[in-house]
Length: 75
Image 1 (tube, helix red, strand yellow):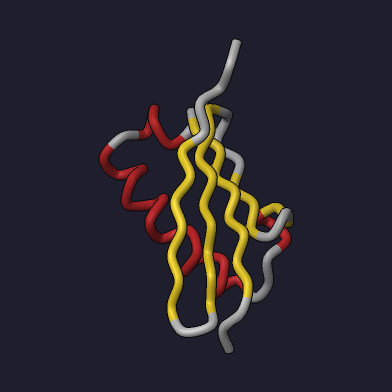
Image 2 (cartoon, rainbow, N blue to C red):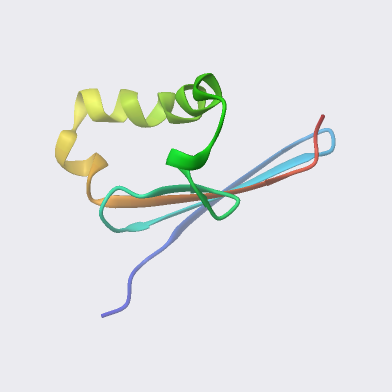
């Protein structure tokens, strides 16, 4: 079975972000680091805000996708 991956990207000044969304079980990774290991806690909450909004609308969907984000640059 081939899993379809949605890829989104954005740039601003010298910062770049690529987001990969695939079928999965709700895992979130930033630069290949699990979200649970991101410190400080406030940074983790800011990163997860869009997914929390999604959770309010569709609990089933949030637990069926994996999100991997690759970011670089910026200040």
